[in-house]
Length: 162
Image (tube, helix red, strand yellow):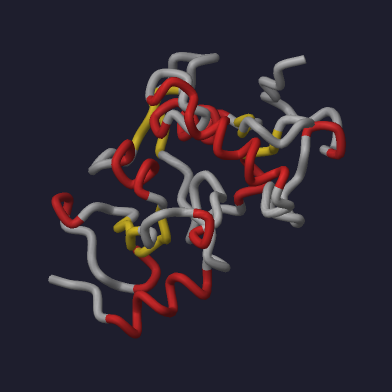
């Protein structure tokens, strides 16, 4: 089944035109972002608004039909971040310079690992290069997103690179 145009518009507006996984800005992309099925259609996921998220082409491609990822710190297989049920800032922060996403929970780390949110294994780090340009343009990271230096200390499971 195809997601209709009015539902796509609602998904984009709800996400504030950001990829709900990596928080890239759709306007800074060369292509419109995809409407992602959180529970993939191949696994019987519906077109219900609560099962849809806005995803950039990279995140949508790396997520494919996966619903789990491995936390590199514990080796544990975990569900991926669910933007309908979880808050981004509870699981991720930006590095102090705003170039890298840091998973601060096991779900955040598993999602970062599965989606390769910092292009550590793909594309020769091109997402970090793009973020550097977006920072210069004042478009990145989103103002409401936490950064490493501003994050509440003592949150269990931080894997911040210092």
